[in-house]
Image 1: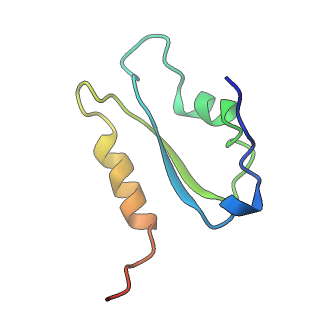
Image 2: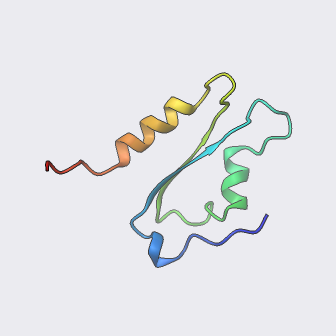
Length: 78
């Protein structure tokens, strides 16, 4: 898997959530392993979260959505 490091200035103020799905499978990468492979483990300057999930039974999905809701800036009234 080819990845691009997330140290670019274009991502400096970006909030992102990675859903590490298929955690019910024995060969699934853990959230930590995935962070390392994506180059996110060494870069803590970005607001990001890797949430282990299993879409089959719903594990972790709401936890990830709760995280992103807490980290998004408040919406301005129109």
